[in-house]
Length: 197
Image (cartoon, rainbow, N blue to C red; front, side, top):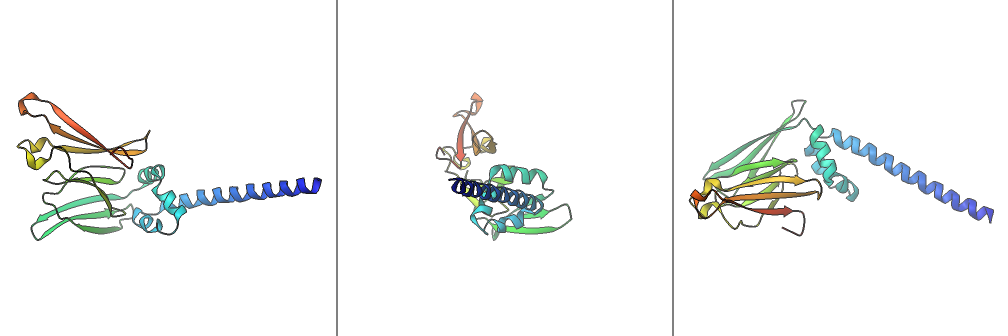
């Protein structure tokens, strides 16, 4: 009976050592990730599921953004034959690279940004969230009120934010009431990443 007990104790100890080694490797890997530029991290997500899990974790993304010295410059090109969004990234070492993304819509503008995501809009009222590092985007449903449908288009605005308690992004769409002299503002809220969009 003692030998079996010792054997089980040995298995538990080996399992604990293995778990500790995994945690240590995970901590070291996270520290390495923190030192890499976001452009490199976008490629690292494709290596394996565990790396994808770490690199898409919202807490990790927030911490990486806080430590990052990377700056982003945006240039919107609205020529008929060349509608594009050009993004220039720089880091603390002076390294620079550029991304260009073709755009199909007219009058593109950036509403705001949050945690590295851009909230983009256009004159039709269409809105999308765009991650310049991964080049992924999500189009939001067409708003109930769109800029092209009213003379009060300058009052039509979207704002992207992050809710720490639910760990979800929210986009608030503000638009005027039926009469401009009533000073009433209406809004819709979209939740991104959940089922209550």
